[in-house]
Image 1 (cartoon, rainbow, N blue to C red):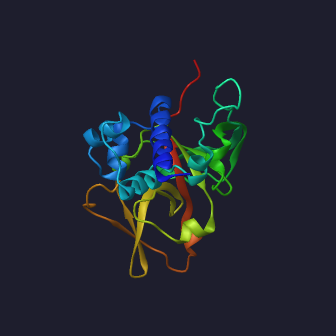
Image 2: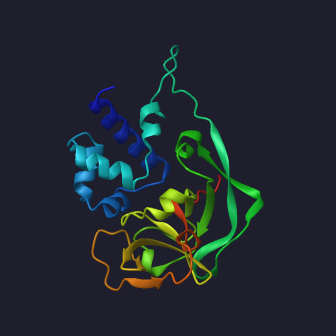
Length: 228
């Protein structure tokens, strides 16, 4: 497979998520720091992506290489020319909400589940879905009643990346934040990372293990779509 084909599949995956309401051009621009007009032109085929920009979009839009290699949504049957069906996996939904002033949910609902394409979960460890409450400090990243797919991989919870979002246990609250280190303290950062944070919030670990504070990495955020 050529790099050009991978880039074509990346753009097709972005277009699919825009059609499904999982992303908007504006949100993608904020996540990546790339101008919205440039993203619009790329999606319309009027501009191309550099390898560096393609890597940035792929990582921050949480599009897995498995999805690109499988060509999800673009693979065709050998006969008929119709898109190959994508199996869905139902992921448990946490009971309660994540947000400031709310207790960190500990249990998943015995009845509520949310379907995801299997390819989206290929690299996600112990996936869970959480419903997000309104959070003024993160309004550039999500809105009230959005859903977050949580990845509980210990490696991804300890190898922190500044641009990624994490579920943080702040004294019993469950918050979605970007996180970075400063000496022996964690800093909780606001927003999508396109601009410097005005007042990062220090969070001392003390005797706590980092995986007790960083409870999960956010693999995906999207709108909760009520059935028609």
